[in-house]
Figure 1 (tube, helix red, strand yellow):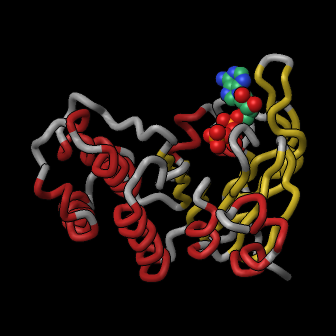
Figure 2 (figure 1 turned 90 degrees about the vertical axis):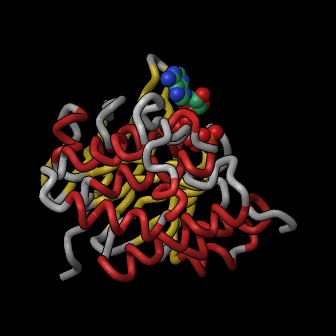
Length: 240
Ligand code: ATP
């Protein structure tokens, strides 16, 4: 029998007031996979990420994580199950230093691996090491994105949710971030759910992908399979 997915989203409907944003979404993420969700602005990608984290909660359907129904759990309890989120717009703590931001990330983990994990983050993102005492709010956009991801990783997540990590970043920085994600997946089996506008890089990186249109999943397949489909190329990749 196929293994139970680490995350199973089933028939999820999410509303903002009376307006339906997710119209019955099914998504599976297995342990050790990188899965990407692509789609146009306003398709509902961020809403799905947020629904997995319980804010807003699904009005219908279920979200199961590691076999447990988390649909109605408050966000802090979902976070305690080791789902870490690096949200769109970064949201690091602007008045805290790089070091303090990373400490906050490790707080959930309990702190026992702090020194070793900090060293690993600095290996992956040397920029952060050079700026260890700088306030988060004064970092460049790319540095803030690195910090947001590093902070999420400090909690040793079982599932890492990344909402548009490439947003507003130079191509070189995007590559560094995607390389870091691939390395963590290959060396440690980190499971990642990645929302991206940058469909080409996301589908290249991911084992599998989903396409969302207007609150509905319209296509799914391996990254390579989706990249090859003309309807994906024309809608989500420059130059068709
Ligand atoms: P983008 O790529 O532009 O970030 P997205 O695919 O992540 O888009 P969502 O942010 O999930 O899309 O938005 C889905 C729909 O829900 C949009 O129509 C949006 O206007 C609406 N929406 C999002 N947040 C709210 C909110 N807090 N209140 C009301 N409507 C909202």
